[in-house]
Amino acid sequence: MWQDFVAAGTTSDWQSPKLGRYATGLALSTLSRGMYADHYNGLVTKGEPVLNPTVASVDPLANPVTVIVNDCGDSTHFLKYRADNGQPANDGPGGRQFVKATVQKQADSSWKVTDFGIQAVGSC
Picture 1: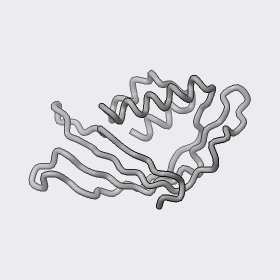
Picture 2: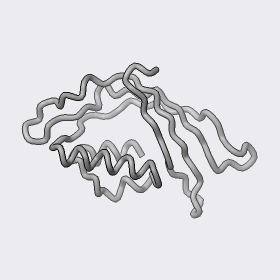
Picture 3: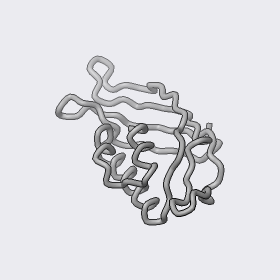
Picture 4: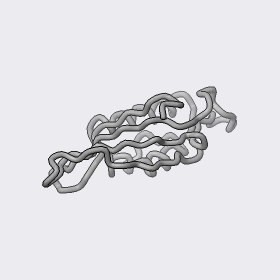
């Protein structure tokens, strides 16, 4: 999901069909809305976050349909810039942020992120 978000962010392509490959529901809506806001405000994102996700829980244990994934992502080199002149946006420096995602098995047996939250820089 994050790789597709990174790719779409280089042009703030809020309509990228790739955003829905690994995200659905609230997660997809959050990604698309954020990307649209960047597009509307003339911003693009450059770089990539550093991610090291770990499984926090699975439910049920015997035949999981929901997995909770935690991470302490680093957005130091994943920042917003003005599309018109390439100058950094004033969204502050990146850094380490706690990320929690819910991943659920879909009717077609694929797995997709259905919800996620990213805490403030310095939260982990």
